[in-house]
Length: 447
Image (cartoon, rainbow, N blue to C red; front, side):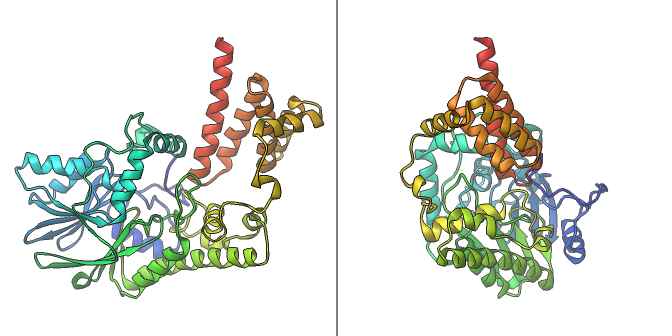
């Protein structure tokens, strides 16, 4: 299982130069090799500009006063990223800029500090938006919850990928993580040597996001506003995302007339025309999702109606920079509904629902037993109707929580459904349900 779009060809020849690869993919509109690479290898993109491709990337600028790094990658990849950096430059890291507070961007900061101390360098000054400390504090207060949802979300990823997302650890935030020294609210200008950087706050995947513009280099640093997959604006297990604001920020970036775009995931992009193509496509799908969802809400549609009616054109979904292998449009619709309509889905029965087991018991009684529900669920799954099959198998499992036959069927259904899904979000949830039933079967058999 991979975070990255599957190549559209079996040819896996590796293009070492990320700019050459991105240019080819954008110009041709299709990818024959991965576009979102976790290699921990450094590429020099321009004079004094480098990127280390990891989870997430580190983007670095060389100045007379030292290095400026955008993001630190994650805790598991931080040391390898710093080692790659040191194969390029050995001078001090003067400034570390967090594009946002997700742990794959800040978790590797401990490795940067350790490197500074090993070299007897002054610690870098850490910059970020004022909401980053609030995010990190929330992570501290909800440590167990965040560990749980990350295990579920990334549980299908093999540890061999080295992303550090499936490790059984007691702390969500590594204790070595460095919090920002300097925060800003809306905009900030930082000058290091001859390099002048403009920091801009924008909402998208998070509410603490920074994108940077470097006028002298006509370069954008976009963080997770560009990730070379469908925008992560709908994650079902995380806090509010901001699809409309995301699109507005991308429009601001397009107005910069940049010649180089450096993202936190995926390939760097060279050339104003290519940059505008990718940003414009993202704007188009996000704005269309918001418009179509809001229009249906204004017509009085229910959430269930909306998620089944609002779609993204398949031609857009097929583009390598919009492939829904991480998040997907249906989940973005949920977030749009949550933002503009609240949490209630307009189904009167869901406003103040009965306990789930009571409902399951009643349904099972009406149809003649939970085993009948489970058998019908399996038949529906075999016919390809996984949505309806999942409803029925959940009724059966709640009505008979220790029934080995039912949990065997439940595991089968979610194993098959996981295979049919494209996004990591869906795969993670369905894999977790599958493992849950497998664990119950194993436990009961050993009692």
